[in-house]
Amino acid sequence: MKFRTLYLSLGLSCALLLAACSATQSPAPTSAPAQPPPLAPTSVPTVTPEPTLPPTPTPVPVPTLPPAEATITCEGTFCTYEGPQPIPAQETFTVNWYVNSTAGEEFALIVFLTDEGKTKEDVVDVYNQETTPDWLTPAGTFFTKPNSSLQVTVQTAEGPLFGPLYFICSTPEKILTVIGPIEVK
Image (cartoon, rainbow, N blue to C red):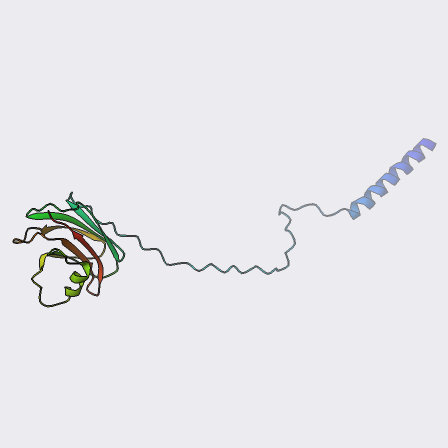
């Protein structure tokens, strides 16, 4: 009987122990996932966007012209000449004129033949005069818009005059460049 009492007291102790443990256990989990505790509000740094620059205008492509005997290119407010020196004495002479500039609303290319001994300063001095001196012969006046190209024909044999040739590149407001003297032979 001692075994039975021991066994009963051991069984009763285990049952009491189990009952005591069951009372302190946490409730059974539910099907909803546990939510993390809410975070305390924090300050979010303010990001100031950097100022944006206006878009850079895309240059307008200047059309390519057929081959000519010379080329005059205006870049900004300066013009250059590429071609033969001296220019052959013939009836006409073709020039490709490229204006890669927005320095004005309109551009002019004015061509003069002059007597020997005349200078750029002489040509500039008569540029705005109403009368043309007898030592200067107009060989062509041409107009175009910014960022454009034009093939022009210059008269290089105007009467008996075969003097030096000058090209004046200008806007209505001012002379940009005087190219010359270029001999005509």
